[in-house]
Image (cartoon, rainbow, N blue to C red; front, side):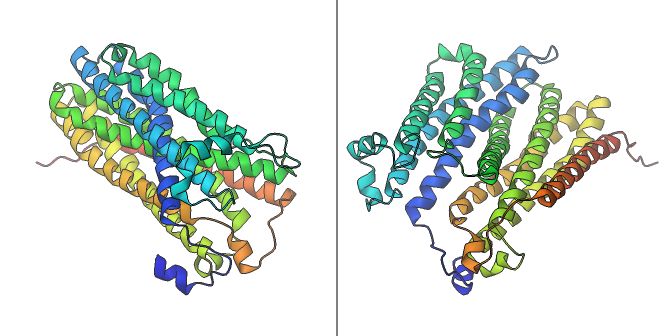
Length: 389
């Protein structure tokens, strides 16, 4: 990717420094661990564990592993949040090297700096509130290291879910009033992109990690895991839709022509990200059209052995591949900086009635395609298995 960037017409594009790449990717990994994990636990894991057919032994094993995972997610969020805050200070235009920005006193001064002229609130105050919420979120999750707290895993996960959501939403609060509707939409779609992306990745990572408990689960665990994969497939499908819609808006705002995807630094980084996300979607399609129908058929046939193999051995392998692709997306994210339109000298994107009409048509088409995907997967699950004489 580095050589491609050098070969491109990258006027106006600046390669991010290593600390910028690590801190931004680390922050999103921390957010995935907190927000993605808690949402997946609330929508997928908890309901499956509370189902009447789930054995107490399986429920305890998975709840214990979930608690440990959430506790470590709190540690990662706290560390990543601190480094991201230092990175914000280093990027604030005050000429402070990243190493010096790590000093607590410098960070404190940055958080208490007065508001800029024309701002309704100081930018530092926004980050002060955000990181206070982040610290509370991380501390609540870290409490799950204590055995007594693990008896309240459900309550802690449900409590930290809105808190972790607030971490990213507060950071998006603008210090100055957005100038027009486009700017408001930029903020909304940017947060939609971040939230849906980290929920997708964080959920995949949690379920892949929980699949490691298969040695402690009973023979009937395949039924439990079939339910969890089914529930998460719906969450993932919603995330895919949200990532696609928000990504199309953000791409249109910053890319003025298809050719800018390989003639600008911003475009090349975005193209790499698009290819990685396409790999994620392809892996999800394998799950939806190949694995899920087989799981459904094995479940109806009461084939315990096949169900266990598909849900706890085959499915997690595909999911781990998705996690690797998802982390690669986060590593590429810091390179998507600036705008391809600016680099290429293109006009600024301005919304209009025709743009909104085209967007609405795309949203409807996407919704129809996702519905068709679900229906096709369900139809495949009812197809009879071929037998031999």
